Length: 214
Image 1: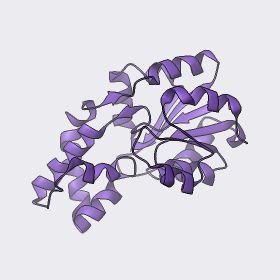
Image 2 (image 1 turned 90 degrees about the vertical axis):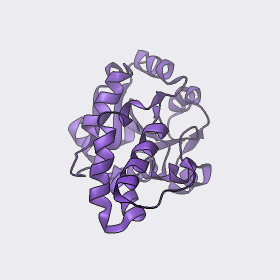
Image 3 (image 1 turned 180 degrees about the vertical axis):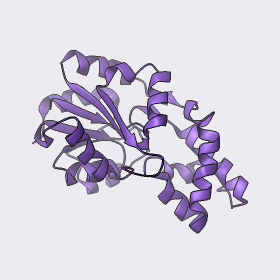
Image 4 (image 1 turned 90 degrees about the horizontal axis):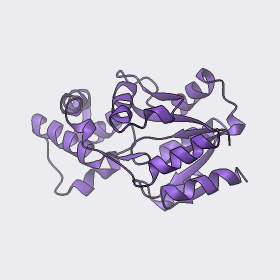
């Protein structure tokens, strides 16, 4: 597979502290109920946030998203950590001559800042994300955009991600999909969505990429 697309949250970095903190900030500002445990909000990591806020606060979701970004843009995006082994995997894949991309539902403006902060941006030919108005937050739409903009063949591309949205978006575009289990999606979630294979750790990725689709 010559072109490798990585999800960001739950695949390259662990954003739990920042995302959950910003969700709680938005809920508090709105006077909405707060879950007892941070783990009760991890389902929000990965999918487009507007949809998650619609589930949490109904028609106040746009206001909640604005409040979330109020904190995220200055503080939350840096409450984050690169998963152990990711940098080494990117170095190995880049050394093999593979074309590396980021394909995230997160707005591009935030994704670029996060990857620059962790000095990972130079590994990627391009960082693709959504717009602040929600354009291309859907992974099917986003990956179609990636294929068109970078002139990639779906048959030679693979999407790596931790949630079903990554896998479904890839399959809807004829792209191979690899699920990772160190993020926030379960084995059942990823398998049912149609992931070709599941990887327990980042270090498992190069071997699976070398095998190609079955």
